[in-house]
Amino acid sequence: MPIVLISESLLRRSTFTDGRILRDRVLCGFCVRMNPRKRTFRIAVHGLSLESPFNKLAAAGLMPEHSQPRARVLQISELPAWKTAVDQLGEKQRDFLLLTLFTGLRRNECKELTLKQIDLSGGVLSIPMTKNGKPHSLPVTPMMREILERRCLGLAGDDQLFKGVSAEHIHSMAMRLGSPRFMLHDLRKLVAPVGEKLGLGDAVVRRILNHTAPKTDVLHRHYIGLNDGDAAGALGRIQTELNCLMRNACQAL
Image (cartoon, rainbow, N blue to C red; front, side):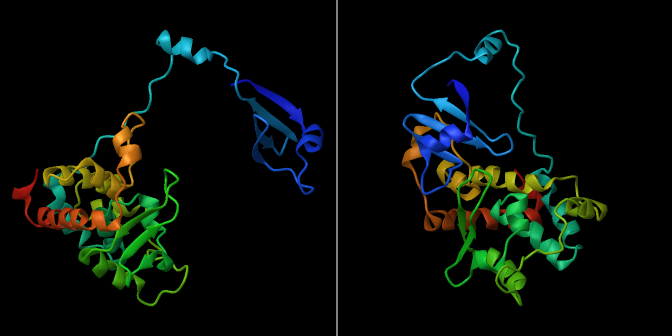
């Protein structure tokens, strides 16, 4: 889509609305985005098509490869040793790691949880903004409730459940206590293979992890939508299995 620059004064005369210039707007076939530092606007003209030079680079094999997902470091067979080390941490640090494991939340989603995101009476944990830009929620299972009730005690409003926990260093703290090597994202990744072992469908695992289906997967991307109630039973089963795996290495996948 061709891009042209236009001055603020010219745009003001053509898009003046209530004395203000809107930073993002679509008007008369133009997509307008303002550069506030240069006082100019980038205008994308709809209906015109220009071939991108990157297409030729890709065809010639000269484009850099997309970054590949990092392999999971923590293995399911190592969960008993991981749990033994985690149990030696402080209560708040232990609760943070277990809640991350049981929910599959991303590191910052769990670290930044506040009291107002936890509805214990309604049984819902809410994440208003996530990596993919969509709000996320999970049903509060019995295992989650035990942790959340302990962490919410004495808090109010915007108080964080895990204030003072260092998400950047907590894995190192656990490893110094004998834990196998792991990264926090490994705990999120463990939800998927355990769900697969239990025979849960892709749709429900994606719903738990708030993972967007590929664009080519029209069925899961546009037709299948699951709510908290649909995910509650599956999430409870995954958490029960994870708890068993932490106690018994012989059950490892």
